[in-house]
Amino acid sequence: MTFIKTLSAAAAVTLLATSALAQSAREIRGASPYVAIENEPEPRLIVDPPLAEGLAQGVFWAQYRVENLHIAPVFGAGALHVSPRLGHLHIIVDDLPWWWADASDNNTVDIAGLPPGSHKVTISLVDANHNVIPGQVVTVPFTVPESANLTHKHQR
Image 1 (tube, rainbow, N blue to C red):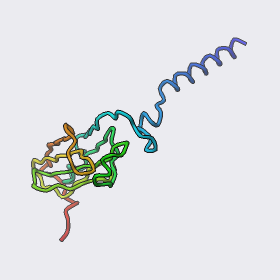
Image 2: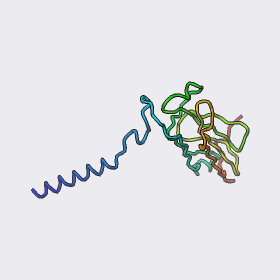
Image 3: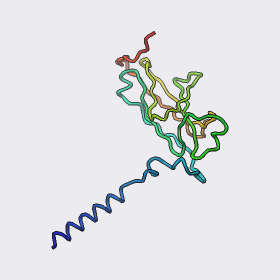
Image 4: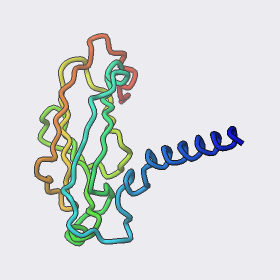
């Protein structure tokens, strides 16, 4: 009988501990797209340093995530009034005068063919009309090593 009580207590403690550590889908993925969010918190962009495995090949791979905004290929004035918010990324390499929009939400910026040396990538979180969300620009400085194996060089 003591064994059964001990076993039952251990099972109850395990169940409670597991429930306390579990996070809901909303906590991990954010709000449902089917319900408007009142007083949405400001969007946020988080960018990790580039992966060393990519730099060794002349490739910039940096993972990112956003909070309080859904990245999607939706543009224009009408998209500014939806909830949850919609937007995308603008990406600039080495202060070039042009950028490109990334609305794929694949969680990794991928830029290949970078020559050895110092570089920087600027990633901006923008709304559906390409307006930068204040405070949500991340510049990532990095160096492609001289020893980089440039296997991803584009063939012409």
